[in-house]
Image 1 (cartoon, rainbow, N blue to C red):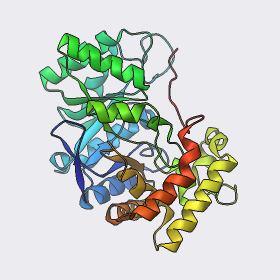
Image 2 (image 1 turned 180 degrees about the horizontal axis):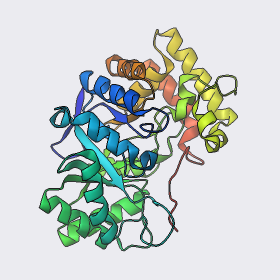
Image 3 (image 1 turned 135 degrees about the vertical axis):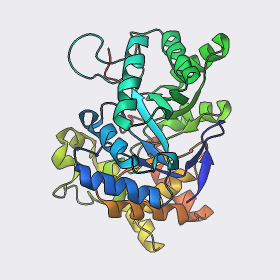
Image 4 (image 1 turned 135 degrees about the horizontal axis):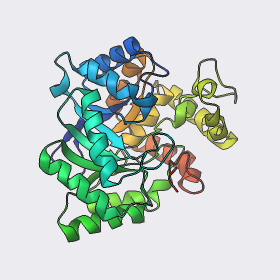
Length: 325
């Protein structure tokens, strides 16, 4: 496994991370723990979850899986900020929500601190300074080591960094955007900002939900796929992205790699990318994805991937999460 610093922080994270939104939903508890242990044994140390994944089950399962002496082997990241149900104060990034949710997350995760605490999406109803002061307090108390953002636009992230500098508050070290060959929209503004400000990029949906593995080559969803279990995902299966997936499969096959591994390797070579969140619903997928770390991309392959994915620098992102009004 290869390791990178997370932005300008001193925190080393595996080039490939483990996303766990399938834990407790698409993968049952036993399978999820096997996936977690397989990832750790393969050298993956970055484990990403959130307080809303599988209605809190993801955090609980991770806590159980790490309680067998594996907590110190991982960089544990979780998130706060998505809606958690009906009614006021059931989501967002107010001081009240952050202070309440960190304690609940720590209890489920069976730990007294998280390495990276992330705001899941911008809360337009809460002053950004309030959010940052609450996060700063968590770092000072030791419940949180580093803080990050997710689903922030470039101007929103820069505003947060400016407030932190002006008020002498803890600074975001990372941001999680949707980023892949099938969605390069962050390269217009967010990526240049991250390179300039030393913010580590943590891509989610790096395989575009399986499109970049060739899973939907004929435009049909195989049985048991994400489309079967999440009908809303079907709207992302547009013809242009399916065609891109086919081209990636052809290029990967000609070089003896899988399309998924090639797509992940391309991301690993992108500026400011620190670690990549890749989910799994079966343990064997961990090793399949880990093959990407050993791919040494030559300039010709990079140029071809850049060229076929160029149209996806512009237009609509593959995914955005901004549910709060």
